[in-house]
Amino acid sequence: MIPGVYIEKGPQDWQVIQQKDGAADIVLSGLKVNPGEEGGNVYARVTDEESGLPIAPWQKADREDDASWSLVLRGIPAGGLYRVETCLKQKNQVDIEWSRRGDMIHHIGIGDVYVIAGQSNAAGYGKDFVYDPPEPGIHLLRNSGKWDMASHPFNDSTHTVHGANSEGANPGHSPYLAFARRLKKTLRYPIGLMQASLGGSPLSAWNPEEDGTLYRNMLDIIASAGGKVKGILWYQGCSDTGDPRLFNTYGDRFSAMVAHLRNDLQNPCLPVLTVQLSRCTEPENRALEREGWSAVREAQRIAAQKIENVFVISSLDVVLSDHIHISAAGNLTLGDRLAAAALKGIYALPFGYGVPALSGVEKTGKDTLCLVFENVYDRLFTYDAVAAALPFEVLDNRGVLPVSGYEVRLNTLTLHLDRPLGEDIYISGGVGKNPEGIMPIDMETHAPILPFYRFPVKYSP
Image 1 (spheres, rainbow, N blue to C red):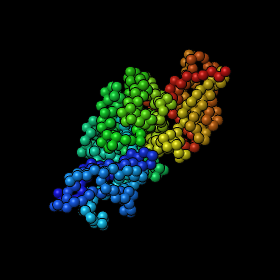
Image 2: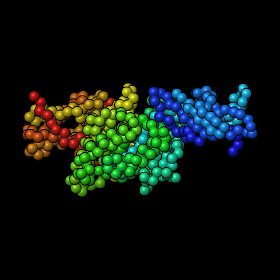
Image 3: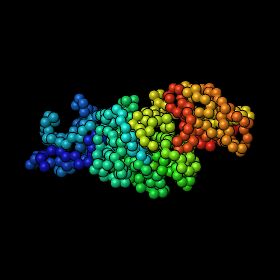
């Protein structure tokens, strides 16, 4: 080995290190090689990758002997891209810039890191085309175990070191480069992504109280990059829609997974950003599928209401690239909505927004129901559709009640029914595998309402 400093442990090129309170530490260790009997000390610093200006000045190793060294560069501010430099400064040497050579680490970011988990629409199976280029400052821990500038497809299995989430076919476009791009632009620091998803995977593979194979694989991936992340990007549920034992327990099992993850990562408030199931255009062969898809969407909606720091966005309006996978253009929309949900819910910034969600339904007359929605920033809009085109299904003890008319006022929607309401009233919106009807939107954000299933109706006094 030629004389100088060698880094054996530390960040990789292109790695994004999770910041806390606007800064992060960079931990380094390695070997040093002295020529002959010369003395010398190891130094390291952090510079701006674009200009070379120092971000953290030269710092002498915290621990050092004749052959090894270690140090911690503390409080490196969120930002980048940065370069880590090392050198071996000889005894009595004044001009440190001419010290003996040392290893360098390039293109490091200090920012926020998100883990991608779930099944095929998380892995990204948009097989069409859209302009969504890679960008410095948006980096991906690839399945090879190496950090890189993020580019599609994310779940590429080339040289994978994680066989558990290797795809059986080449994936395509996903929502998460668009998600990271908006966060990076708004927060003004790098965003890191870790891919752990697998097409077709059931919730049981992610719940450590069941099979948990992909859950443990995800923890291994997180640990390989330092063990700290900002949040989880979750898109899953299709594989749990065909069996009542699965879709009727989806909410409880998802809640268990979140609780275990927060405990294992020692972060009791770890944010989880979720996508409510979109549509599948295959025919519904069984009534069970209609119930299963509706029940999973309802569990996802309720999870965002009941579990702190769980957020959900709607997806029924986006275009598909085949019968079930979100198109590339649709993924841009979902990525932007996820970023908006994060900016509002995680970062508490005015640049974000949530999606309209049903918060209550009351019987306001013998044949009228009033639906109240939260997260409406301007007003609900139905595209002036006729009543029969709305996606609502009202059920009482006498059967289904058709909607004969409606009025919209800001965040409320009043439905007129074609007969008086009976008892045990429930209302659903956006039902089944491929829901029919025009979903109302928020006219400000153009995000559609979240589908809901068998919401109980209260009686107005």
